[in-house]
Amino acid sequence: MSIRTLIRGGLVITASDELHADVLIEDGRVAALAAHGTAAAGTWTADRTIDASGKYVIPGGVDAHTHMELPFGGTAASDTFETGTRAAAWGGTTTIVDFAVQTPGHALREGLDTWYAKADGQCAVDYAFHMILSDVNERTLKEMDHLVGEGVTSFKLFMAYPGVFYSDDGQILRAMQRASGNGGLIMMHAENGIAIDVLVEQALARGETDPRHHGEVRKVLLEAEATHRAIQLARVAGSPLYVVHVSAEEAVAELAAARDKGLPVFGETCPQYLFLSTDNLEEPDFQGAKYVCSTPLRPREHQAALWRGLRTNDLQVVSTDHCPFCFRGQKELGRGDFSKIPNGLPGVENRMDLLHQAVLDGHISRRRWIEIACATPARMFGLYPQKGTIAPGSDADIVLYDPHAEQVISAETHHMNVDYSAYEGKRITGRVDTVLSRGELVIDRREFTGRAGHGAFIPRSTCQYL
Image: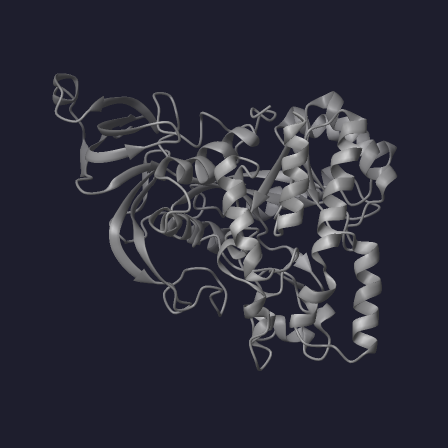
């Protein structure tokens, strides 16, 4: 039985428009929009009417960079697909794109099937996959074509983590050449991992073992150098490039210079780089371990360049790189050796709220908030206009957002399966009130009404942002 739902009286905000409008939902999709109080809207009937007075009506967030259940450093990310997608819903995100991992020596297919099995029947919201390539060879290059045909249209490569995920320049070039032919988008973790490993070894030999040294060895210049190199390899291959988790002013400058030449080069940053800094890595009593991620947090002065990049569209997307590890028992694996701290931060629940706070703080406009968190990630990864907007025919992934509610972010109240919050004690204005996923209530006035298994796998088309 299909339920017709009417959302009345809210301010509908998309990447392109703001309109006091009513939204009619039928069969899990947006059926129509009409300005509030008009004759058209007045004729609509519905089984369920939701009053959105005083609230924003926005598209569900699209978080294009999450790592649920990711094995890393002898442990695994603490959020399952069930807990992680439930937390995403609480934070107003209705689609995640997670990373399936190829194990070196094994087929891409094997890695992808493993991730299908992890997520199947577990997700509270819709999901899709990118594919991590950790072993580029003739067989896996051919497999890339098959994955694109299956709706897995983006491939992540690492210039970091030698011995784990690392690819050399020749392998990267081959993968880029393949993607330029099959329409896939290459995503790049741009840090010079070979040089970083030398600096790690030297720091540990000097007895520099604390979490803050993680940030000091993963130098800004080694992010900028790798970003530059990735751009040049993409130019040689004739391939578009998407650089993940950009953290530093110098890396933004490399992207901006490429875009000024008209190259199809794109960049993502994450809330941790916009709101946190090396001050957090320096917290005493090993508390800094909570903030160990790669690329690392940078000195606070880099934040202005990231915000500017988001305003000028030299950075197009804010994703979370959500990869949570509990402080107790997981982050603590690196006591006495920062290189053994599992890399990653929790954040899938906080992104939409933090970016709304950025609107209030004057960093971005309301429409830009929706653009970088919903519309552009959907376009970048072949999900638009099914996801990322509110328009006739789009999935009814809709969030009623209270722009006046105040909250304090805390591990005591969040829904991520991790024992700390990276933003503990931060006061923000704005909060998710109600969330629909394909027309089904997942959060109803601050009460979770969703279920594991509602979320569906969404095959993606190729990048629509080119």
